[in-house]
Length: 222
DNA sequence: CTCCGGATCCTCT
DNA sequence: GAGGATCCGGAGG
Image 1 (cartoon, chains in turn purple, green, cyan):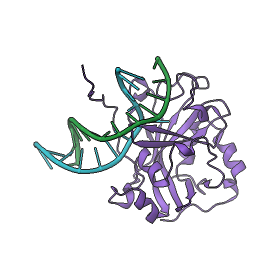
Image 2 (tube, rainbow, N blue to C red):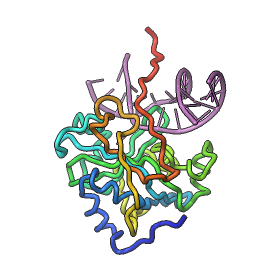
Image 3 (cartoon, rainbow, N blue to C red):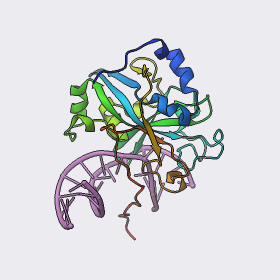
Image 4 (spheres, rainbow, N blue to C red):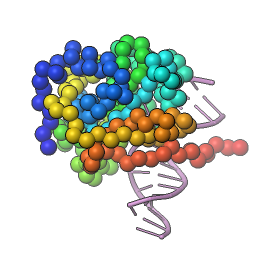
């Protein structure tokens, strides 16, 4: 359909202030926002339909055992300890990238994982980056799919999502119906109903399917 | 439709 | 060394 129209509330300074909020609180208002990456190959824009909040070790009322920052700062998670509005992109499973937008005050080490969205611009380029995708709704229906469609890699971690070649526009009107539940693929207590910090637009076809964390079948020699 | 295994390598202990 | 905020294709119901 149509993307959100940039307006006063979408100026970078105001978006940054919005992102200073607790990710669990602002997540429902971020749904429907449009994130753009204008790479050398061209622009791709995605309307966010599903996100997950990950809290820092200090700022939440109780620590978040599912967060990459649970064990404190490392080289990888450094962007999460910085100011809001920047990207935290990590590499996982030996082949996939996943992207977060850092949230909360500088140093709070919280973020929103971008789990799914609908491609609203640059669909041709997104489809080239997602050759396995057979339907429009599947182009960014998963965190690694979304990162792939936008062309995001660890080269982009720590970069400002609110400045070129990126851009983030908040929705002119909030999503009509937002649901929440346990986070996907998180092992241990962090994936339990104690942490219902996954948020999605109800009945949106691009939202990914829920999957509990699955113990990995190890292949190592005895 | 659901279930399951394999791919593949960076990161932290 | 071990395992992961995943995806995809194939097998089976």
